[in-house]
Length: 448
Ligand code: FDA
Ligand code: NAP
Image: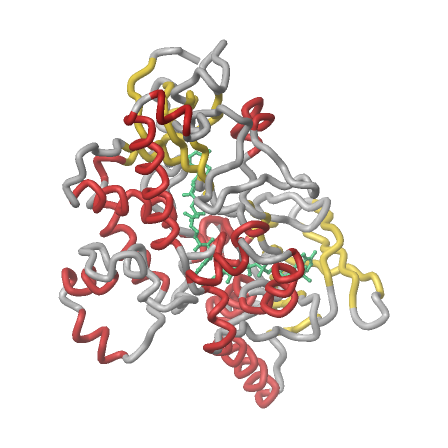
């Protein structure tokens, strides 16, 4: 890779989904407050244009959080980047209010995100995949005042190097497939659903299976049932039917900004209780309206004496064999865990995601990032990786902090607040650095 350096920025964001979009806006509003030193920034996104889980933009899929948990409102309720400001700009504010609904469609929220990103577009570089983050060659951690990011141009242009005093990694969840199963043109993960579905002639899909009992699985099963009236849809469900996502008011408190402190500063026992009692707010659960929509379809079929939607309860996918056009799915099924095979034209694995893991991007640099007894990254309250003493550059995470900051780590609920906290941290560390080496030494030499 060429060592040509085009730019050095105070902050470089890796990935540009909602988390780093929220950060870009927080930086923009920080600048607009007329502070003395602007914090320069650049955001690198591998997609060719903005896209938020585009392959799951299914008709009628709704948001799972209130529109008030948008990119900004919890940090700055008067921001011009709010969902309400977007509705106003689109001329739909009264109509939206008439709907009396806290949960817009994912399609509408996507339009909001596109509108917001267009307003900070001068700081985003699309088609830019970050390959690695390293110290400059030969530099000691204490000496380096920047990190070096290698960036591939997805549009075929020259690769480049970007320099950053701080990086904010926000590369998102990582799709997870059943063990031993790989994606191809007939085996899809839910994260690639619409793209793969559109490539195939729907008439070829007469038997389709959807594995999983989470929101993705239920939405896809509903979609396939509605779109393919000639097809048999098998829902492969590890539980005894879909379970509801708890979004009742008391349970919802775990997504409040205050819950981050309770989790971060809580005992190991307290953190464990968060998971034990509240995992069902998000994982392997489905919104009530989608459960009822599926049950209704199944019941109406019973009345008509047909069975197009089949629920294989207590069942997991244990493997898949491909032979020609045939896709044979191995299932471990039912109360006695019998093993059987199911022939399908396509299998959709809505089998969830792994958390964001920055180690690959960090390479050798990861050795300077400290870990806890369980081998997980240690993270400061301000979302900065705890690094070896003396390291001046900051590596912040948006995502991958469930073990330190709790359930909101991979969700939208807290992004406005979190982005503000990261900007405050970067600005404070910069002020300290600017004061000079004496103060820097007194502050422990940990400033970027
Ligand atoms: P996100 O995954 O959105 O963005 C990461 C970005 O980084 C991507 O654009 C990716 O292309 C880019 N990237 C990755 N590696 C890169 C690299 N090396 N270089 C450059 N770019 C790179 N949560 C919630 O609170 N409410 C909700 O309604 C929903 N709805 C929802 C629907 C669906 C279908 C899914 C799968 C998930 C949700 N979620 C959710 C959870 C979801 O994690 C959350 O909505 C956001 O996507 C989190 O935003 P991020 O920006 O952190 O990640
Ligand atoms: P998820 O909640 O993690 O669910 C994955 C499901 O796959 C679980 O039921 C899991 O069961 C099952 N599974 C795993 N391996 C399996 C196997 N081998 N065979 C059969 N089933 C298997 O993932 P998700 O539904 O993709 O949701 C991820 C996130 O996206 C959540 O935050 C969700 O709320 C969000 N989401 C939001 C929307 C929306 O906003 N409308 C839409 C979709 C998703 P076990 O738990 O037993 O392993």
